[in-house]
Amino acid sequence: MNPDPATTFTLEDLESWSRPGVSLAVLGHPIRHSISPAMHNAALAVMAETEPAYATWRYFRFEVPPEELPRALGLLHAKGFLGVNLTVPHKILAVSQVALVDPAARPVGAVNTLRRRADGWEGFNTDGYGLAAGLREDLGIELTGAHVILLGAGGAARGAAVECLSRRCASLHIANRTRENLDGLLALLAPLAGGVRVTGFDPARPPADLPEGAVLINATSAGLKATDPLPIDLAALSALRAVYDMIYNPAETALLSAVRACGLPAANGLSMLVHQGARALEIWSGAAVPVATMALRRPGCGKTARSGAVPPSTRTGSCASNSAVPFQLIVIPVHSSNSAKDS
Ligand SMILES: NC(=O)c1ccc[n+]([C@@H]2O[C@H](COP(=O)([O-])OP(=O)(O)OC[C@H]3O[C@@H](n4cnc5c(N)ncnc54)[C@H](OP(=O)(O)O)[C@@H]3O)[C@@H](O)[C@H]2O)c1
Image 1 (tube, rainbow, N blue to C red):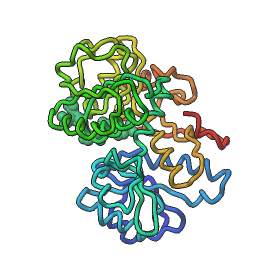
Image 2 (tube, protein in one colour):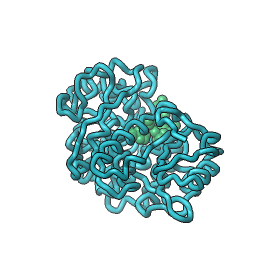
Image 3 (tube, protein in one colour):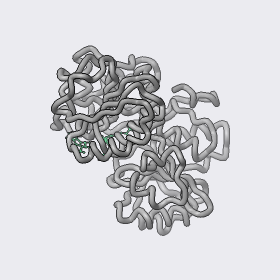
């Protein structure tokens, strides 16, 4: 069996899986448009140049509905898979289905990376790390000491909020459309806050006492569709330092366009995606991962953002109009073993 990583596989394919070599997988529903196989296989190809053992490693995507997650995880283990990534809607569901949860992932209550152990899977969450690394890389912002306004109370917001608190942000202010979901997140965060001020508010009515110079992080799904409303009215907020939108496809959301029109630094979620993926591959391989090889671009763009050709605040600008075209991958050969530290 020689499966093509560009294919979207199903549980039926997994039943008859017999590939030699090390297999990795991402599970989601839907998953067909996931760019994780392209990212990971590009990094593995570069890693194999210096360590031939990686030549047999391949990363595949599987369409798995939530009710089939237990069967999928059992089959992946039985078939010898080394690692699994989880995306919507599996991250929270999987916590109760793994043998062990990494202590750092427990407060988040969600896992996006599973590593094989003899008795099942060990769950990790690399999303918060990816966000922190993306903020640093694209905007030069450290969460430690930063005032943060976070939009959303779903899984991504939960990971972001826990990361902000564990890195001792200066204050955290969370807005969400549905009050009940906001209150649930605030209750989860209360024991983690330490001395950090954490508040919640209705995005339609931002309070007047929000701190000036905060970084705004969009962790809502508003912006995935061109018809979506802005998740917040920027004019109703005090002066911001910068904006990070976790959405990366489309590369330029209405929020990012509005922010750039104000002349503020802004970035989309591609760097978060890349860094959470690199961290997952480090967990599976125990080796430094050449993050730059995971860089992605859209057709028609001259160079990748990581080439330095595009300033961070405009890295999505000239390519944003091509939002209907799927991402393509450019491999930037990186031979330095410490390239994973480029974030
Ligand atoms: N870059 C990355 O690596 C990365 C990683 C993870 C997630 N993400 C992105 O982060 C976003 C959220 O993902 P998730 O997993 O947290 O999803 P989720 O658990 O379904 O949560 C969705 C959140 O978005 C809010 N929302 C949805 N539609 C909205 C609208 N029209 N206006 C205002 N708020 C709206 C929801 O508010 P209610 O509570 O009111 O429903 C909720 O807070 C997605 O766009 C996802 O692609 C990116």
